[in-house]
Length: 230
Length: 304
Image (cartoon, rainbow over all chains, first blue to last red; front, side, top):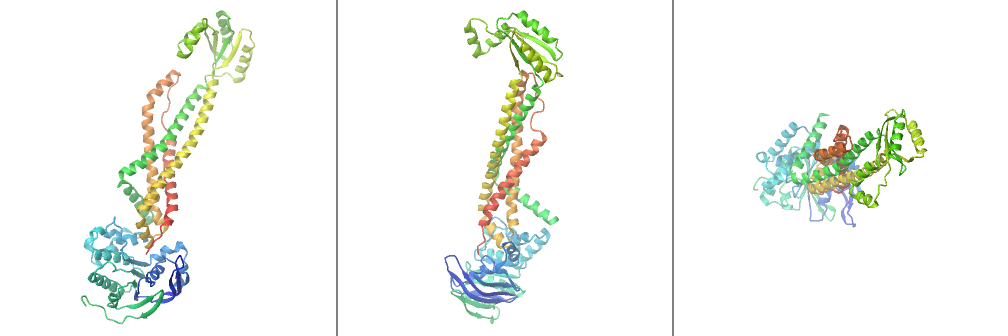
């Protein structure tokens, strides 16, 4: 269980990004954070990734306040969190395989285990045949799928995605969302920040709408899974 | 333990691979490091060699007994015979005023001056070579006795210049140590700056790795190995330069030492010095990398 407990986040200069936000994330949930630019979506993801710390309030993971973790403990926490970015953050001088392998290299897996898990992850995103290609030789959608494979390869307990379809057309965006949905169905907890309300609305998940640093609405998912082309 | 070793081996090989992908830049950096290490090492080796040769000359404790000007040659020969009977003396030799004049007039600087005098101002001289077993006390006593003689003008130890040479060499050696320290500091700065640029070039990789949970040690390790390779390769280049220098300098040095009646014994760096050059390179390379990594890695924080 992850709980943001009355969290306020002030950035340098006094800009208030979040104000007294309380949000519980249960294991296996798929949550869409939506809202306009500056609503606080990315700040919540930054807090979950421990890139930022709360100014006030607690970030509790299984009852432990990780918002106050000492710097030396942050890497171990981050290894339990998969991250997907709008700009993919792939390393241009490495193949798709090596990009996906990076979390496992960091975790210190043996070469044999690493190869097995990387190929499984690439297979899940449909890119096994392109494992030797560097990112520049892949389409935008393929690059994002490599990014997703990298995020799930280490079997994280939480996957966060910041505008993962921001640079993709509608068809590719839907494809990526379906991929997230599939991973969520096998138990991966997900928090996805997107400003694309229409796209988020087509996926069965919990929808948390943020406005000016506060939660405006929080609706559990009620819709059926989307079908391609629907 | 096995995984730890494997990871280090992979990092070391990856760092070497990275350097090999930029051969020109790597060669330039390694050469600069090599020169910076070779200079003090070569100079120290030269000074130590000179000290060794000078030390071998210290056994020669010859001294010269100058007669007063105008004393006849026979007086010099009598004195030589008398000194030769002393138990501390191995042999004596008389250098006549004419021989000395002939020797000095060959000197382009002194010759003209001596000739302009119109007469030979040099005295007859007795050169005394003590036995190897002669004690310093017995020689001092002999010298005092000779200085007291009416026909003797001056008794001069020929080894005094050796004492001066030893003092000069000691000064030079200390100056080289200071220079060596400065050059090693330069190596540390060269490696540090190179690693700093490398850190900047790999900023995205560092950011992503930190986001994915890489520890500081994980991020730091490849850069430390780059410093390690720079130091090791720089040390090897330094040894190559020193070897090449020794090859070029050996023949003229041998000829020079022949003039002084000695030979070149061991020439080049002894094994401990070879190890010291390599160890110095490694230490400077790793130190430079450590400082650069410590200073600049903390500046790179992941962004989402």
